[in-house]
Length: 486
Figure 1 (spheres, one colour):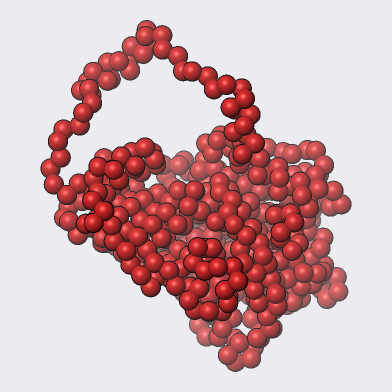
Figure 2 (cartoon, one colour):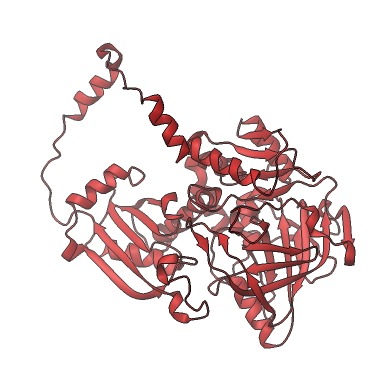
């Protein structure tokens, strides 16, 4: 049975030991960000919990973070599976989407605030990069809009700057699907309806952060993953529908052609994302459940929730495309968090002919512009999640003059600071021009045998390991303390 709502899901995380309550009172304007950062730095990904801040100074609303991408175990729990079942879940959603259904009422509208009462300052949006962000930011809004010509909705996640009780900034890059909705409405001097949704069935959040081709309804994909349709209710003041069991919904309109200064903001690449003139949302209504729960993402420097959640979902989408659509024998696809789950892409492939590594590269790049500024293809005997094995393949299965392919004039990664200096014109098309590197680190001819003991000898030693009395050297205390500080 799929999760009914966020509260049902949080109960499951608690039962699995994947949710930690922070019961000390915290300040939203510096402390939440610092606690989250230390959690992601100090606790290895495989043991990292999601966090629930129960007491936030000046607010009656708790905040959850890391509940979708605190770790790969958490990501799998959100899909009601184990880590090795994630690809199957995504396959089901993409192959067999189930359109959402409209119902008459839902918990997300237990409380309704219109006009001057629609105050978004009641929600504990943190300041994430203190001293550099211009103020509080919503980092996990599932932003709903629709194409004014076709009526097909889009659900994405974009940074939202809090500018007042009834006003926000919206940073949505030119390649993003919602930008097309805004552009079409601007051309006809019409406002763009928008709904910011917080705290839903977790599958909705996972589809919202995953890039799909223009025209794909993320809520239908979520329905396919869940195995039943997402229930929606009509908004009160805009022509949109939102998940009925959401915790919080902020309705509003983007005035045609109106742009104001927004940013900078600490972004997924680990640097401050540039500021610029971006759309403004004028809030028309706020609805929420009784005693709502506010959801946020930790972004900024990897590792973060942003990088973890992107890697797990995007890997599944790329792998499905390469295997199902292109017929390649791909063993694994990996977007390391160190690359913000965008800049570096690794593919392991059971190569059948010499052209297949390039076919895999172009297949991933054509799927979406954000994938793999640097893409490395290796043989299927290489564990691409083991950096040592990847570096070994790069060292001894690749010739730079023959196997490194550079392609100029490609779409740039959004917010990649290497593409242009900070003072460059943000509207200059050259800022969105980049290049890609594809490295074929597969064997091109028969190789000598591996220089290792026979496998049967290694397995025999494994079975007798305790008898050898070999112990690991413990790291000095000073070294451990230093690693926690960096």
